[in-house]
Image (cartoon, rainbow, N blue to C red; front, side, top):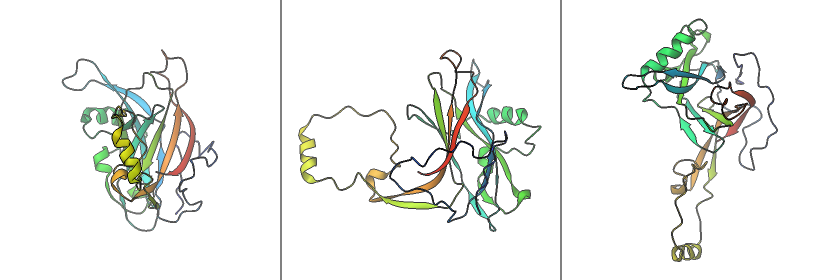
Length: 237
């Protein structure tokens, strides 16, 4: 069933940019596998004083609701990544103190009475609105110099694509030339290459939701600015 993406602030897949994600595999224009219905609130910040800390810690979070109308039970195992403009990847941290979730649940109790912690959202998702899951993705916030970021949500679709690893197949001559050179400094920027890609001939791309945000305003006011959603699209990642 076609995924219905309905942001809870009332916009439906608005301002989707052209298909400009490169020459790699693209998602099918019509669903070729199961897809879940995903509703979400745009990311917000929250500060929580956790035990052992002297100052409140800052977090980003995204409240969401997921429904299964595919006709059969699906395994729901989502991944949420927040990627800054500098390609810094911030993954949801299962080590975040439970008090952070408690604070979020209290903030949204009026609209999301059945909010469950991220770990309790994982599992078999049965068919029907009565079995919908309300949960939240939480990231540690470190965005003092960030103008924009993207949120990637995987686990909403069964569509995949297997591609050849472009890093395989270097010639022996190239390797010998490189061996004579001085070692280069280690790269510190995270790579978009899938984990394990250098050790495999092929790797799997999954249909993933990409939501892009800008943080408006000056440098001094950006840490309190509300993110502005710029685009929403499916990609293979």
